[in-house]
Length: 254
Ligand SMILES: [Zn+2]
Ligand SMILES: [Zn+2]
Image (tube, rainbow, N blue to C red; front, side, top):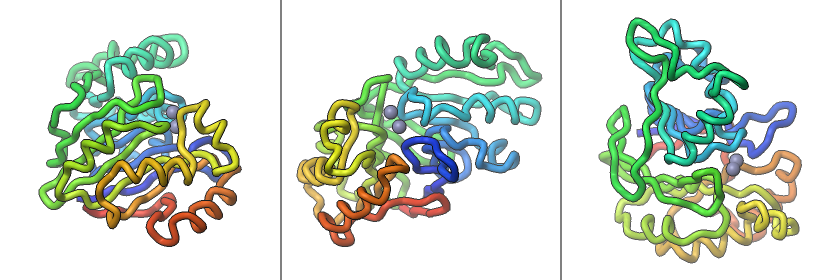
């Protein structure tokens, strides 16, 4: 199995792409940059799996369903925590900000269906992956995920401040191949990171002490674009080569 990185930036500026990663061809993890996919790629996405309802993770969900509603054979499945999906239905796809596509009928049923995640239980995703959702410390119904294919598993923290249970669960995985973890701010902005439930390189270093796998590689995403330079310096100083900062176009195999 593989992950294609579509966008990894933690905010929007010229030349930046908000969070979206493709798990194989059928699952899009977060929809911040869904429109960066070609129409053909978007059509093949069966499910959008959301970490949480913040705008940088859901922004282009509305454009994606708009662009593919007439060419889909099946409804687009939008999966997230109950709280996350309620926020989207109430404040985004509500017939005010954007059409409620779950009420738009096509020849194959509704254009879009919402599916609540059950926390802390393995569930099947299209394309032969299983997933585990774990609440993390970020608000807006935020979840991190473990993904498992028949060759290994990975941890994706989603957006989170310091947390515990997801590291405990990842520590139980004998076949953990990598960690994809957020870093949003540099060490000198630790107060902002804590206040907004995000991580800095130094906070991530402490989080990784909760994971009993010192050799598993770590890939960082969600850097605030205007802090990238400072974060890169902190990462180089603290981690030597254990942490790689992800870029659009990267492919991770697991
Ligand atoms: Zn967030
Ligand atoms: Zn975010």
